[in-house]
Length: 340
Image (tube, rainbow, N blue to C red; front, side, top):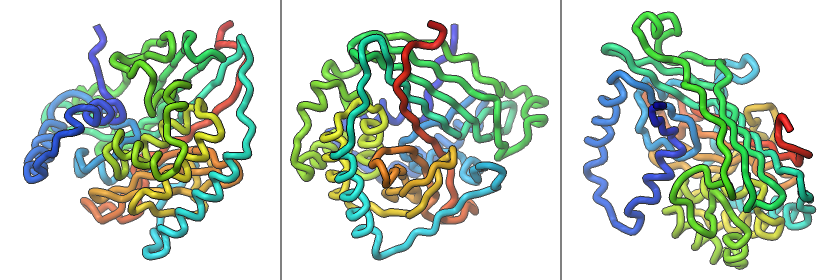
């Protein structure tokens, strides 16, 4: 039997859905964080792939990740204080105007919408009395039929490309750490229900037509709905990105959602940000708990083309502006499923 391993994405989504309406006491968080760090030192594997805010749950050593892109050792982002809020609103308004005029791709019967996520996620494996950390390259592909209530196909794989952060591959193997991921099984599911307990009418991660149709059309009211569902802050930005990158939202809804994000407190912008695969865009993000969660927009199309996490403060020797995870998203319409 395959052991269940949660990515950071999946874990945070599950946690976000638990007891959302209960006000919590934040005073115990330092102790919880210390316990999590200690637990990460025990044998086993922790895959930190995903897009939820880290909230400093990873090892200090894990925080020294410097993303390697096209041979460059590290990327840094300089934040311009003071003018970002107005800049973010201007960027979102412009992107929304473009998105509203866009023609939705036509997926005719028998064809599929193919969504590919290419990501570098942090993974920590434990052995004996130490742990080892590395950036792990992942590719996740989803094929969505013309009728989204039909059968979807999902494939996820690790490429085998790694960038070591703590220790080396030779040291990890010598210590008996398990580096390779057990192959992820191909998944097929009606209506994209790859996980249990999905909302009947969809949600931000899976915006079925009835979900999209039920969203407020007024941007401010839409933001309030997004805030209520996500909990606000960086999670609101991530929930919006989840919906936008599926390719399932009609153009008018995408435009309204971009305008809604203009109401997100603390939203900032970094111009001319490159995503993992070299496409250029504008990064908009919210900083909380010393880390910045960002989405990257293509200003020419208003589409979300990537996401990333950036250190927004010095932590365990990590300079402010260090990219700690990165992903890109591409969408296309294809004639058939692979192998057909």
